[in-house]
Image (cartoon, rainbow, N blue to C red; front, side, top):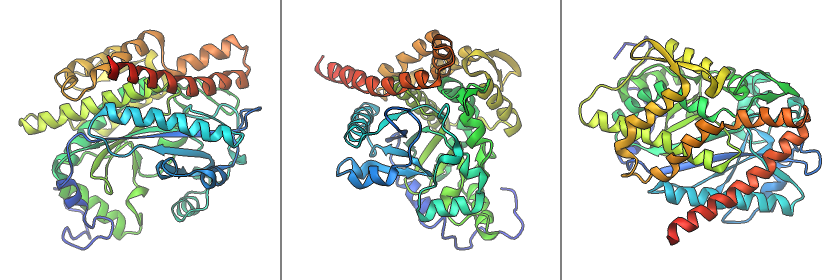
Length: 405
């Protein structure tokens, strides 16, 4: 482990207290999913600062699964921890249905895209919580412009060293996940020419964000956290916003790179692919095969390509040093992780990825609608609102049919 000046590897750390033990007690491949929703005016489909009202009117069990996410025009739904993706998928679909129904009662609409296509960031208010007061006070403009919506996966990984090594390996597949999930080409009233404007607004703006360094062990990772803590760079672990990170509270590997998904089937396909990659890296670790620890600069090059071109571009094969079509790289992940698909119940969800590659992702759909509606952004977003609702019911029907088959 590299020596970090001024850092005592045995010194007490409030941020790291009990975290190693939490990972050592974790259960492999438990699943938790988080989706972030835009709170919208039902007529204009612009963002509305009504988070506190939304929460105050909610009752358990929905209330127990809701959380704030920086701005008052956003709400997050979080599943509990599940033993299978099938179980988590059902709760996520029911949660989306219930969030929409609750918004209906309050005279709001909700939708999911990675960024809102036309509401000005200056009109959005930061919610009044200790964490977000800290974020706004430290980051100012960087926090104000972060009007973004994401999809996050928490996957249980047993063992602190193992979780850190798997997190390091997962860095290399973040570009494929981003390209597949890209769903924010429209921002500030125009086509940004990016497949994922969200990546620029959040991942490229926030400190301690994006692709982290490669860590070979828990001690190496913990030394980095201790240095940040001892130099007053952070006061809590959630100020580390990396696109993949060991989550201190849950003992999970958290994958945070994906844009929010309008289509719930897309959300579940992305979660399934990330789970398959984590399971594959865990198996490699357990069987003594080396895990990838590619240079951050090379991964960042692929991140740029995914952010800019989504599924339409080419990614660098980091092992061979050659380009290949992004769709081919994604199919490579499916092939490489195939031994884990049936075992973890991922196959029904992963089957949808081929449809995404053939028919397009959210960025493709938004651009097609821009053409169809001759640049009418409200009409484009009306489709996102409608599909946010309809796709939840479609997935619930699919899950019910699968259980009854």
